[in-house]
Image 1 (cartoon, helix red, strand yellow):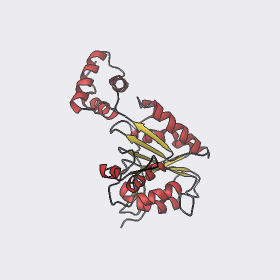
Image 2 (tube, rainbow, N blue to C red):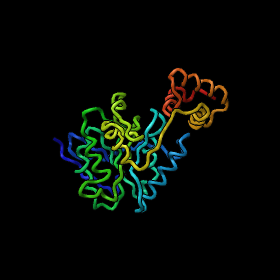
Image 3 (spheres, rainbow, N blue to C red):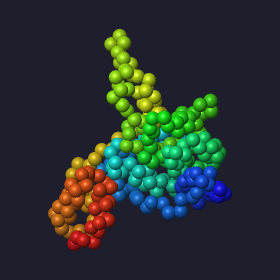
Image 4 (tube, rainbow, N blue to C red):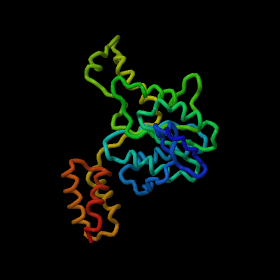
Length: 258
């Protein structure tokens, strides 16, 4: 097994947990996505910025869950957040869902460092029978020991409650004295997501927002009508309008319009 890498956090903005090393590896090539390049998600962007600025200032702040439709900018927003605030002491550690059981060990090594750390869990969800969420719960709210003040968890997911929801679970709910009492399975599903104090929802773009995103990627194109016509045709073929579709359209057609 490879020796774990010693991270110099003064010069390293982000690292990723590598299972085979049983340690962190510095990320040397950050995604360069910039804050102002993100279109159509102003509300979510502003809310996450406020929370992060409070965190960096040592004020009360929340763990954050960004959930919703695929390709709508959830992961890009987290990456842009690091690029915006890394010079203010923000550091980020990416941990895969399958490695969440190691979260307590990761966090133990961060408590006394003079930086503010976001644990980034991308595309997070759990299936029936998985137990990794239990370690995540303890980091979000602590157990006997409170979670460290210099660590927050920011996660993205296509699932609002992070766990699968079945019709059979709803059928087991009961009404007592006029009040709805959810089944235990539903309580378990919701309890994890509830630990994220900031929850931001993302939805497919309306066409005008999609075209604004396309315009930002083609700033020098003069024939906007032709550009928009091709962009709409491209999105229709894919069956979805979102930031990812706009990026894919750019990669396919960059240099094709005058």
